[in-house]
Image 1 (spheres, rainbow, N blue to C red):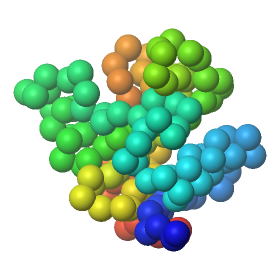
Image 2 (image 1 turned 90 degrees about the vertical axis):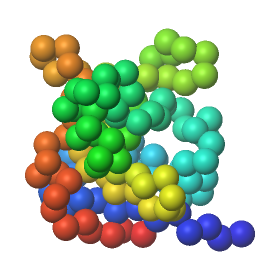
Image 3 (image 1 turned 120 degrees about the vertical axis):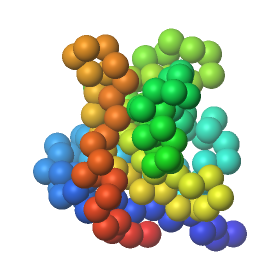
Length: 138
């Protein structure tokens, strides 16, 4: 039975993705293949951890507001490798950020970067990745 899970790249991320090494592109495309088949109703279909990007932040934190208003989520992509730190999922140093309105079957990939910045804060994509015109892929 066909499903209607669709995804796309933000315009800026699409340009950057074209220059990624093949192994990194493969990791992103593995994620999108699983998404097309299973959507996001069951996170156990994914090897890496998926969670909303405002998790753990105080509601008064500007980063909480930014992540929540922009519906930012992230997936531990397995770069440079997956680590089994938890019994239910794996984490990695790099995460793939995407926007997901939980009422839809569409996501937009917006950025991929290290989980934490040099100062130990959770990395969030810059607004320029979010405000550009989305480029639908499937």
